Length: 244
Image 1 (cartoon, rainbow, N blue to C red):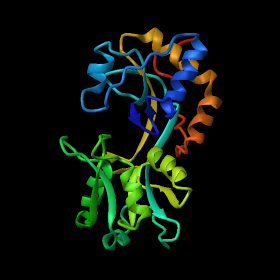
Image 2: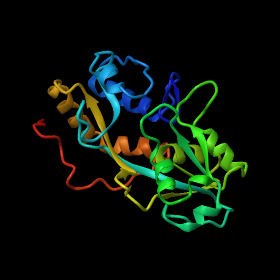
Image 3: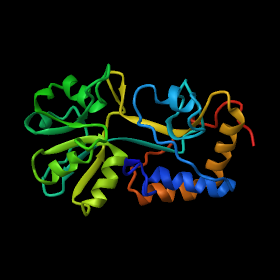
């Protein structure tokens, strides 16, 4: 209920807009089940029947029935426009002399992709960590405040967050997709679909039809929120068994 640009309880996030478009298209009443996205989210919230549809899920996720992706985004490198920096690769040795803002996880088996990659490239000592999850104490958007206020020199963050908060800050940042699609097996670009319970194939197929019929409207919503969108791979076709 408090996770912009994704969603909030005032309907101001892009997932809110997608949910409203879906409900209107199907002439259904929209009800939200607010649930923090942590480990076990899909097994508990979706498969536990607290909700019927997750508006965003990684394509090919085994524990859910996911549609073909409707957008693909990546981690991005964010700098101030007046910084003079032109960074596109995490392997750039320039990072070793900069204060690098990244989101970190405090209680998970792995850290975020940027945090792990900077360790791989020898810049771990330059990292400044920011909270990943939304709470009264920590806010993910604090990383953009720190960049704006010159407390850090560069941030490596998930693209949809960067695009939105750049617009909120008046477009003062330069945003470039991370050149690497993966580092040491850790992906930096992800294709996103909508998810249902695995056994709800008919519902998943109906969502697939919705995504295809409203492709342009969905793209416009994502553009409105500044979501950086990479081309969808041609091989990422409709899920097996899907039909109209």
